[in-house]
Length: 314
Image (cartoon, rainbow, N blue to C red):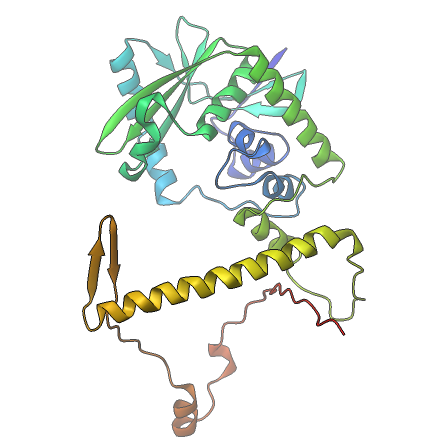
């Protein structure tokens, strides 16, 4: 059974709480590892309250997308001859209590919805030959799951360049797989069981935010359970060192060939080696001539640095 909660007059706090307590369309790609910007672990950290989600509502790209939503909807109707309407509700279904959906538009006279996207011209190559980003596809599949509708349209405005329309038909096998992944993820959220750790920047950021301050009084941890990862760190460190040495040698040979020239080229490669000026504040000279800088002019921030070292064997 479908349930709807009106969102037209919902406060920002109410909307944030709603998003944090269930899985939305933009979360689907993270759960199955297809979101290039947010990992499953980072999403889990947000849903469990370990990390406060960034408020992106006032970012220029987000504001632009919101402001142009009506225009893109109009372009969709113009291009397809279909009519659409707003759906000012957050939608739930009883057999998926962990999920919610907010549709940009519903298509009139058809069991279908519309997702609206705006992107810049640098992303045009992502929409060539009938293709579009996987995280868009996951979002539309999530809406198909929650809504029970037959298809979802995706309208994309590549600013100043092109307008694209894609159709995602309902695929029961794929939707069943997505539903299982979302159910498993929500079980992990409810039971405080972290997803598999990956190496995405968002995962590292989430760990830094979850454990921002180290405890100098804490006992050293026995890392026997991390033996495989420690060996992998050692192996990668050696490979990186060897590659860095090869890179520096190649760079030095190119620099010698350039000499005093600023630029060079060969085939599809281009190289520049330009002189640059850098201004820095001479703190020692300042303090010698004017005295110590008052503490209130210093900005203090906390961070943790991860270092790996293999002890020398006797």
